[in-house]
Length: 438
Image (cartoon, rainbow, N blue to C red; front, top):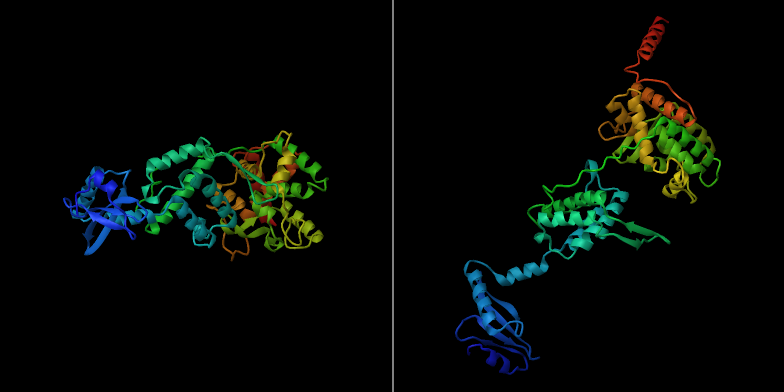
């Protein structure tokens, strides 16, 4: 044993198997000399009845004086119940954001992550979540340790996504496919919501104690309030009529028309199966909508259209694709081309759905009735045991789909909402009295 000085450390000779030289003035502080000639400073101590050895660092980066001060600090931690070697090992094993996200993805794909309504996330939702994880979360935070993440980190992440820091164009698995990642406000809001769920998953797994996204102030969603005017419905009808004469766009035009007269979501119509069509019940019995299974009332114009198509088509899907038995493809590309360079260039299937609900409101139907018509969560008819729908819902579906169909065919109306139109109310009363007298 000798005092570890710079001169001694640099002159000590290595041995064939390596050895340790202890400092004679500071017990537990030593120099490890490897057979290669490399030298590092160490400190040895006892914790919970075990002898532990902690490597401070290499000579050259550390001097004997700085290493001795570090050793004193480490032994001070030991005296207060700490264990530097164990803490370092835990740091090495600590989950990174990337590792946590990969675990989350694996459990999500296995159906272990529950989404809306306590149901496993759908494949489309999983694909969207995985995209946000790999294109935004991992590039910005992947190497950080989960337990080190703070609320300011979350705030900075959100700002980076809004500013487009993750903007990139990348290839996808599809032939000649590419994904354009822009970031922006909407993407940031949704990504932070997903990340909040990932951190809740980490809390439940015992990885961290608190979710750093809680209390984070996020921008408000920009409400999409675009709806078609009655004049625009007539323009839409002309576009769809022309497209139906084209072999290339006919089936896509029919999908758009059906969305317009039902208020259904895009995927609900594109993937609609004949087994989900209940013509006698005037409804669609959707097996797997956004809200789970859903019974959707449809009006007489829809029933008549589906009756006619049923006689002409075979297979599983109402709108069949080119394969053996699958749903039609390329719908997003087709409707965008149909509306390009027209006054309706900004119209989407969601706009058609929103417009259907707005027409229903214009006609005086209540919010709960409208919710049932379009399959919204707060009014959705979800019971698979419902065999006969309320006559009010059928009447509402007839009225709204009939009104939209007439607009698409070029009709012009002069009307007020039923609740404010006395002539309509009086006519309804007179009709009721006539029927009662029979």
